Image (cartoon, rainbow, N blue to C red):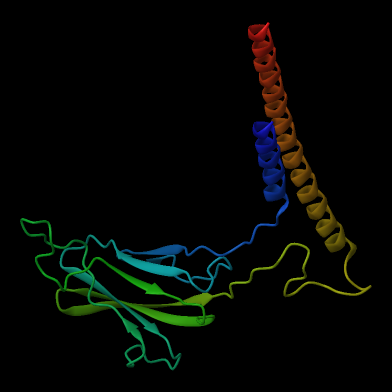
Length: 221
């Protein structure tokens, strides 16, 4: 009897868990910017998916002999890329020499540069790529990085830019209603699957208990 109660509790717990709305939290993502001999790829970062909390890694991939590149990000947006508060990398090279232990032979050597845009970094940043051959700067490129706000909208709640009132387009209302119906349908299917699974377990458990009781009764006789 206790086993049956335990299985009942398990099925109820599974059903409750499937019905509880899950919180959506942004996971930190990294965008790679590849530096080649004639440009940065991508150069301008404008995708709305790049939000506060994400990282950018600039990777040096120029195979030109004796070439190096430097990344400078104008954090205060004053047009100067070398202020105290700006991000300025070392001169990046294609490869770095390693010693016998696999460590950098030169601690100052780097092939990439990373910049994290924290939770207060919303806005547009200009950045500069300098390309140097031997000791002479031969190219300078400038691009923009747009960091979008990291918005977590709860299901069924309005988001920034949503339309309100009678003048809103009917298709927007229809799309919202369709998405809601789709989510409800998926939730119902999930609950039905778990309920069916629990029913099968309970049936097998009850059958097993009956067989055990029957066997015990036969032995007593």
